[in-house]
Amino acid sequence: MEYTKLGKTDIEISKIALGCWAMGAGREWGDSLEDRIYSETIMTAIEGGVNFLDTAMGYGNGHSEEVLGKTIKNIRDKVVISSKCSAPGLTKGKARASVEASLSRLNTEYIDIFFVHWPSPDIPVEEPIEQLMKLKDEGKIRAIGVSNYTLKHLKRAVSTGQIDILQPCYNLYWRHIETDLLPYCIENKIGVMTYSSIAQGLLTGKFTKDWEFAETDMRSTTIPLFKSPTFEMAIDATEKIRIIGEKYGKSPVQTAINWVINKPGIMSAIVGAKRPEQVTENLKASGWTLSEEDYRQIGSISMEVAETVSDWDTMYQRDDHRLVMNV
Image 1: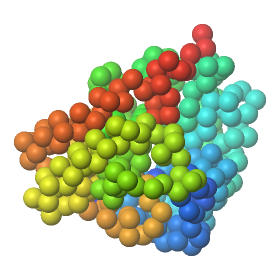
Image 2 (image 1 turned 120 degrees about the horizontal axis):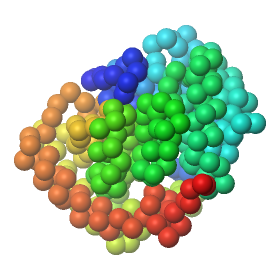
Image 3 (image 1 turned 180 degrees about the vertical axis):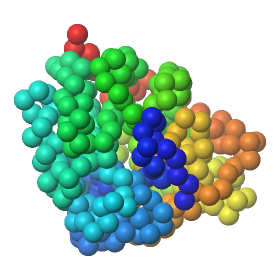
């Protein structure tokens, strides 16, 4: 596993982070599993060199945090934990209670990185940052991050307090941040930690064009990458990526993760998993590099898919429903 220092902090993070959304035991990603399997998945990641574990209070209404807290109870000092809460829960009257609730569920005295999960049109951008800065001064959190922010949101946040990391959606098929956010973060030494790094599983290569999704699986009804004709184009592109990856003895998902973590400015890629064997597969994305020619070719192949969703503001929201900043 490769490691890097986070932004301007002294926090060392693994280039691959384990995403714990599915461990909330919700059914957004199909059937939920027993907590013991989620714990085994977490330990498999840690034993494989992952020290960065990402969760949120909204994942299963706190259940993901509870599972994570129980699993790492005796090795807390060996891991870096990030959690999140959306802006409405981080206002002046609610921020302390929200963070302390996460601390309790995680069974820890501090959270390494706490994110504003989503901004809100009803709350000034500055307010959650001001509240998190106070909690950072008290030692309850070590670093502050923001997620799903536009460049205008991020600049306002930076003018209010120290923002150490941005967590945007980014993968081969979702390239929005390359235009403005990524260059800004590089220039201002803000770490970038990607989510949906394997395009909600689309880059695993397991899907077929006639795939039948479980009724509770939100991808086919909510995520633009899973809508026609983008879905079919992505399946074809993933097959081309598979062929390139085979030259290195790697699967499509390993190749896709490797591409992301070797993108200049990207410090870590969140990769979700529900089972230990998925983690084992994903970890093989680290420790090797694509040739410059193959890196460019994969970027070109995938950009054809990315261009079909360029008018979506976030993975769940079109430009015409863009969040309006409270001024």
